[in-house]
Length: 339
Image (tube, rainbow, N blue to C red; front, side, top):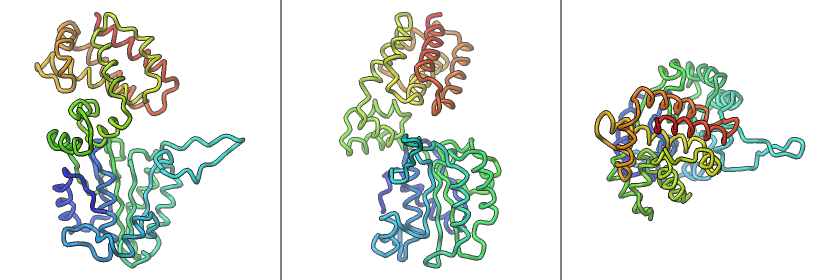
């Protein structure tokens, strides 16, 4: 595989040192959009490889590597919500309607993992399972995983469970305590910009700002070509006195709720940062508008609105009505910024 991103070389060396301690459960944690899953897949293939290279990467030539590349390795499992699965071959139909894919890792998937762990390794070496993202497990799934973490290897060889998490704080403390953690920081901005330019992305600085400086998220955003909508959105909230909250909410219905909430969170971060520290992180081009608004708003009211956004972000994956959610947030913002 050996397709680590440039900013992951240091983390790979850290993993090689951790590997000497033979952990049975590893937690890869960091921001979304920096390549944690790709790192985990490299790690898994390396452990399963018959003849790994001196730098720790898989050889890419042995039978094990070929199985892994084809997604058929008997000693590997990738566990993730149905909505992230690439194949539609398991779609179910009930009453002539397509079953909506699950957004969570259900308990049956973790029970199947327990069965996988209890088996002997096909090649007598490691068995590796990757759970991505780990916080997608519901309460029953997490409790079921605890039983597997308590007795990971048994007598059937070595087992490594890799939990990939964007938000490890959502995992049970008992799960965290049983995992060896490996932090994956955001790459330096200059390195991200250089990499995005190599991918043919125009204006990478703006896209990085929109995505919280996560290069893979910035690349995905470039492919979606939603930069024009973002720019228009920012222009409108920069003039709260003239903001048509209902009209904007109507137009935003094609956007993911989490994305819009994220835009508002970044904007409010800049308002608070400029008000308290004189700095703008995300929207430097709109500094004058931010300064004008920040000078009028009450710091307590801004904090209260940021808390409202935090609640909305947690519920963004399952909004009862997207339009009503946008209307509520935009009306609250207009009241805050126009006070």
